[in-house]
Image 1: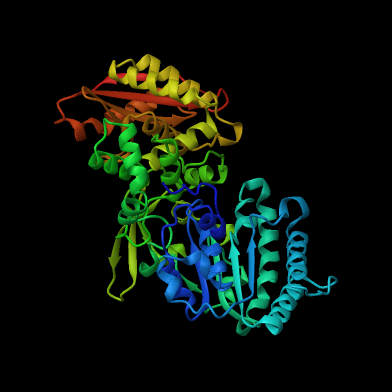
Image 2 (image 1 turned 30 degrees about the vertical axis):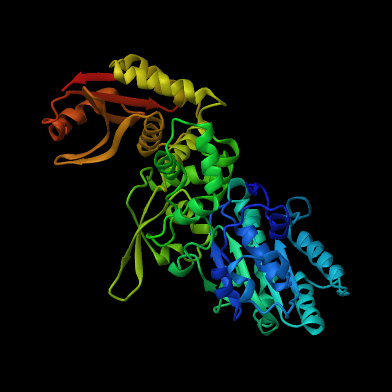
Length: 517
């Protein structure tokens, strides 16, 4: 069997180690044949770095690495181009500050190409000198920039946003020389997760083609179903030999449910490479792609926007355009980071497209809730115990224990997440119950108003109304006065109203008021 290229981001390493390479060179050829400027946004761990490394080896005319691939007899291997490849994941801006770190990186590049820079000048000047001298010596340049936005997205928390703004200004200065030196560049290819405004790579280079939502390149990164079955056939057969309770059909279906569903055109469904490689390496179904962390700016955006259900979300191209650090929008961030994906593309009368967004698959959805809950409330492993407890409680109609669990959860919240708004309570309850496997609807519209939440079991429907610093009497009165139960009167289940009031000073709920409706 060919090796699984886990952690390999360099194309030459991958080929020399006889690792699996899913051949994307036909699409790459269509980009590089005539050159140009391109930008591609994809979530982390989707193969952006490997893509740029592949382009680098093509530009360096290393034909031996492409034996058996589509591009082998298509590219003109007699031409060798100089390549500047910069990955901002490798630029030591956290230690040196961004401007000094970029300068150090440029000086290393200058030394590699035997260019003597004027070190007293700005990074813009040194970058321009590097391009001009390299072009004079070797001809048109391939400029490949990976994770361009990392010095910004690493500082999006409230207490570091000023650093993000400073880095944004530094990057604007750094990239500004590209406009005047565009004639020196054969191919400019930039990757990242997000597309930020006020970075001159977008504002100045209006010829930079954004491939992110281009249907032609929807499968440039990630694996299609056909690619999975062709390139990983031996690994699939190996798994089946070790796990005889699976057939090939059931295995492929389960792999699809776990790792498929990402799309940038609403038509082609893509597997996340990181998840697939780790699945075949470990022979275990786990959500390998999801990475733990506590990006609290996302949580605060959710509270601010009163958004915590992300199914069938309308989305247009303009929403994905470069956005301002002062006006971060939740939905574009969730889309660009991979939590949401395109499930439907709608062609408009002017031939533009609007989109419908959903979670890529059930595991991403559950992992998203898990990351939020763990960031706010749990230490490692605690969430698993809560899953069992709350599922058992709802099954047995044990509202007293559910009240204790909810109270315990809210006591664990960091102080800066106590918001004097009921929507924050709605949000956290919804996320908590969804993650713990409870069927819940939030912000449900009725003829008399909008109820906060309804939880469904096989025998009961629980109608919740939440207040902050008010009273449980007021909450339960709202349920009865607005007749929220009418919506479910034909469900043939016991209807229970629950009034809950959270007291911020105490960081606790008053005793719930419970009423059979």
